[in-house]
Image (cartoon, rainbow, N blue to C red; front, side):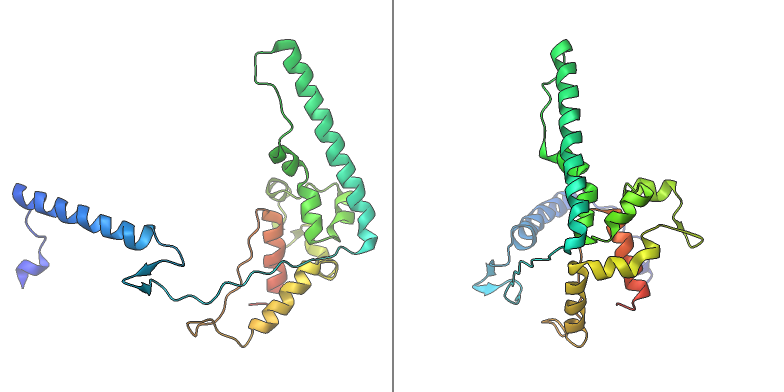
Amino acid sequence: MQKLVNKPPPLLQSEKKDMEDLATKFCSILEELAICRAAESTWFGKPVLKLPPHKHFDIVCKIPEKYLPYFKELEDTVIQNAKISYWKNFDSWRRKKSEAKPQMSAESFFKRSLIVRIGAIFPAILPLVKQYGLQLTGEEFKQKKWNSENNPAPYFDNLDKLIQSSAKCKFIETVLEEMANSTNFAGQEEKLVIITNSPVVARILVKVSATHSYT
């Protein structure tokens, strides 16, 4: 019994070689079984994991008309700023020609259109952007110290307006209602996963979930 409790003795050189061979063979099995498998993959003629059929839906979420002028103004500003930045960089390149020729990439445009994209989720946030000069970034949230209850972000004070203006939020509410008394294919409580690359959107959704008793 004492031998089982104590640390095992070091392996002999010949034993190390055998263990390395076993580890190599086991890794090849793992690669086939775990790494190189898709939902349609089979193992000895049977599915590796039985999954329910995948269902994909494209949901059209309309923006209330009263917020459309805010979008138009912001979109025009984003496009104009992108052009100004490009031609400024182009003039600098033309004088020096020591760097790569500047290009107007989709990535830079999407970065500049951050507020527009967040506004598409919560249209009622756009008047707040104009009123308070919001940037809707994670850095702004930290610098303003809006994580304090005594100093909430302006959009936290207007959660009801944000929800009422958001067709996406309303659709999520219907999904949560349908999930309330349902289980997944394994008989477990269903979960809803929302993916966003915006810290502000994530914080708003967490706040909405907490204040509106969503689970």
